[in-house]
Length: 313
Image (tube, rainbow, N blue to C red; front, side):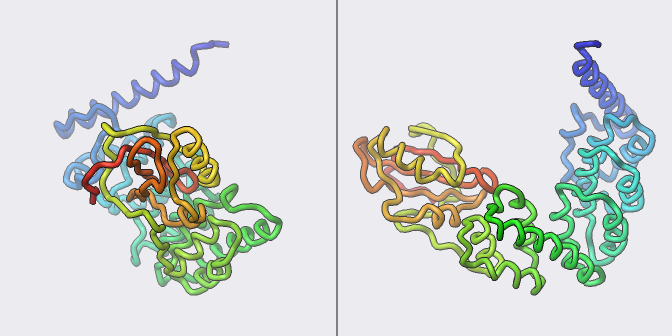
C-alpha cells in the first residue's frame, strides 16, 4: 500500500484545478488562483466563465466535479438549469450532491420550481434537503406536494421527541429551515411546541409563530465587534453549558453576569449576526461585559472584555 496516496490524490486535484484555471485564462484573460477564489457575486465575470466550467463539469475528472458545481452557486447559473438537473440525476458523490442541492435551491423561481421538484423528489435525500424544500414550499405549483414531504419529516421528529430525544441531537438544521416556512400546516405544527421543555424546539416554535425574544435585563444588542485590545477571555461553548460557564466565570474572575435570568431565555435571544452584550452585575476586576452570539445552532461564542466608557452601537 502506498502510504502517500492521500497526498498524491490531493496533488492530482490541484493539478486538475490548475488545468481548468489555465483554460479559463486562455479563453477569457481572467486569472484566478483557485476555483473557490472566484467571486460568484460578480455576475459579468460568472457569465464569461460558466460556459467553460460547464464543459469541464460535463467531461472533466470526477475528483474535481464538486468544486466545479460550486461555481454554479450564483444567479448567473440560471440559464444552465438543464445541465444542473442532469448532473443532479447522475451524480453519486455525497459532497457533490450536497453542492448541487444548494445550487438547485438558488435556482428556484415560480417558473423553475416544478422542474426542480420533479427531479429532486426522485433522488435520495441530502443534508441540504430542508433548505431546498423550504424554498420550494413557497412555489404555488408544487407547494402542496412539498409540504406533504415536510410534514412527514415533522411527524418523524414528533415521534422522537415523544421518546424524550432533544432536537439538537438529530434535527436542528432541518427544523431551523422549516421554522421559516409560512405554510399554515407547518406553522400549526410548530405552534404546538411553544411551551416545549426542549429549549431549541421551543425557540424555533416561537420564531415560526413570530414571537420576538426579549433582550434580557442588563443586556443590549450590538452590531459591531468586541474591542479585542480589552479582551479578557474568549471561548466557545455548548448552549446547554451556559449556566456552568457563568459559574466558572464567577469563580475564576469574580464576575457575575445575568443574575436571576434563565439561561434558555438568553439562548433564545441570540443569533449569528449581532452580539448580545451584558454588563457584569458584580465584578472584582472593574467593569466588565459579556459578549455572546451564536456560532451555529447549538454553539455560543463568548467573549469577556473590560467595559469601555462609551457603549458601542
